[in-house]
Structures are given as C-alpha cells and as structure tokens.
Image 1 (tube, rainbow, N blue to C red):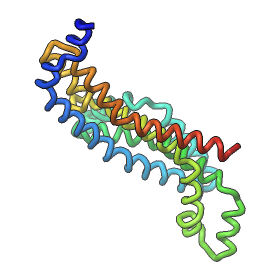
Image 2 (image 1 turned 90 degrees about the vertical axis):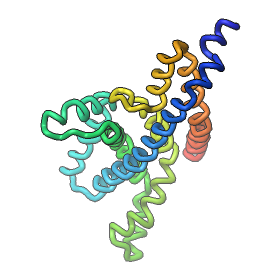
Image 3 (image 1 turned 60 degrees about the vertical axis):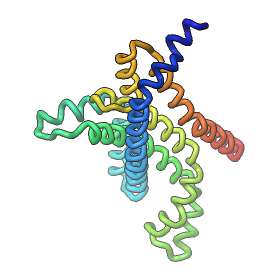
Image 4 (image 1 turned 180 degrees about the vertical axis):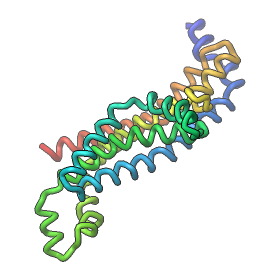
Length: 224
C-alpha cells in the first residue's frame, strides 16, 4: 500500500505541480464554456432549419447530420489544424479545438433538437395557427419551449461528453488538464499528476453526471 501511495498519491509531487494542474483546469473550463453554447446554437439552428425546410432540404440536412456524427472529433481536429494550412488557412490551437468540437457536436445537438421539435404534437402547431401566430413566432414561443423540455436529458448527456472531449486539445499541444498532468508527470517522474487529473475530472463531472441520470429517469417515468 505504501508503494502505491508513493507512486500514485505522492503529496510532495502534487505540491510541486499543482500550479500546472490549475492552469490545465482553467483551459479545460474555458474550452467547455466556449464550445458548449456554440455547439448548442449550431445544433438548434440546424433543427429549426430542418423544420422550415422542404423535402429536398430536409434530406440534405439529415445527410449533413449523419456525416457530422460519423466523423470522430479527433479526425476533425487533425483535418482542421494540420490540413487547412495547405489551403492558406491557419488557425490557432484554441480556435481549432473549439471548431472541431462545435462541428462534431452540431450533428448530435441538431438531431436531439430535431427529435424534440418533432415530438411536439401537431395539435400545438394548429393551436398556434388558430391564435394567429406565424410559423416563426409559433416556433419561438410555443414549439421550442416544449421541445427543449422534452430533450433536456439527452442535451445534458451530450454536453457532458463534450466537456470530456476537451482533452483532445492535447493533440495540438494546448495545456488543458490532461496534457498539463502529463507534463507534470515528466517533471516529477511520478504518475501522481495523472491521478490528480482523474480526481479533478471526477469531482467536476460527477455531480453533473448524477443530475443527467436523474433527468433520464424522470423522462422515462413521464413516457411510461
């Protein structure tokens, strides 16, 4: 047990590298705070566009959603950061990571919002028309509020995954939490920083994960 603590819970190593972990946590939170709202907005835009589109445009949107969901965020990041310079477009690491996360999650959020909008009974649309609401006003004031309430759980679950995906930033040498822990490990010759990073991720995401679980259980009960 003592040997385990020396290697994976070494207090001296933790004290030395704590500033690195704080720096990494700050960048992880910043990536999340920028990527999440942009991904949600892009997904919502895709879903609303689908709702107002004709048969042809809807098929195109479905194909786009499927393509975005099929591409791993890691592949998108590689293409964005390492391939775009050949076309004269060079993005800083932070922007490349945000763009990759947003593009990847646009497909997921778009499909979630689309399912939510389509789950609203047709009678609600008819009621809005009877009250003199145009399609746009009906969508904003009547349809979307109901749709979002129906898909809060999957939206939250996907947001949780997005936060975990910020670790991809290490691929472009951004000092997010996981990369900072690896750098600290190299400096201390001890895996304690990796243990600390894992604990930080757990403490940060576990309450959110429990909330998502409760939301999913609530949604299942309502459907039953």
